[in-house]
Length: 345
Figure 1 (tube, rainbow, N blue to C red):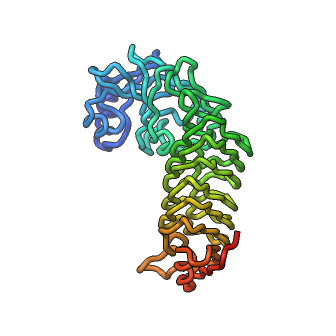
Figure 2: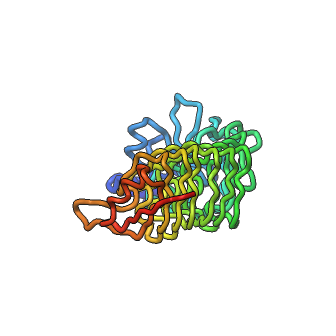
Figure 3: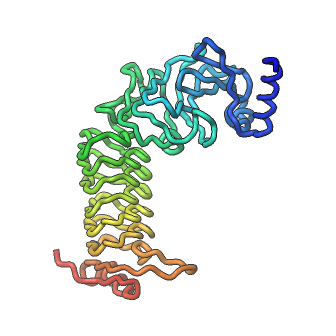
């Protein structure tokens, strides 16, 4: 069969499946670029993008833009260096597209390290969500990059005020967050499988969504200046005891949900609200100290209540000052296995 007929057969097959990647590979070049829609056909066509591959990166661009976006990484590569320029355009964005059956770009990465080049100024949450990176041990960043930096393999904003991502497989049991860090980013420690203890400086004021979720941490001291903590920040972790600092006004939804080893919670005076499901799915939770400042919560903070299923019951004792909101309310929840006792600090 002639090479022309082979090419027609291949493209007909790809079009019929409508989900395969379109690869145009030149025999003696590291870069390929078909100038036609590729990867997820709808994604490319709807946005008027062109597609290409360069070394271990898949990218898109338009003729009008002067910048390149990385949308895929080679799953077989262990150490990837993002190029600073492709086709004379600056590589500025990492925005991985979620797809699962597309040859070398699919699913779980073998990535152990990744180096971000000097023009990268945006890494979307897709990098931390859509691609599983169980082997990742270190981030590296060009010293010329104006947006990000790496310290001891951990990814930070340029001046170190935001901890963006801790490598999932970094072999370290105790990690001391550097003083000066103000914010822990979304998913920053998610699925980290080696870390057990976190030392948090009092400069930290913000914990973003799922910052420590599903990690192996067992012990953490929260910053006394913590003011904002978003949903599921510690869900499904191994922590056994936690003290909620006074400047945090609200314990958010699922913040400590499904922490199977959590036994004791101490809430300091100043906290005002415990949102529903904050402590659901914590079978070992036996003690929680609630100060008079907390005036907004109900039993749904601790037990899963649904009209479709049998209501969960737990063996929990709430310690509260007599005549406080918590003392009065918790006294009504005996049917859920919740007891209340006077707290005399």
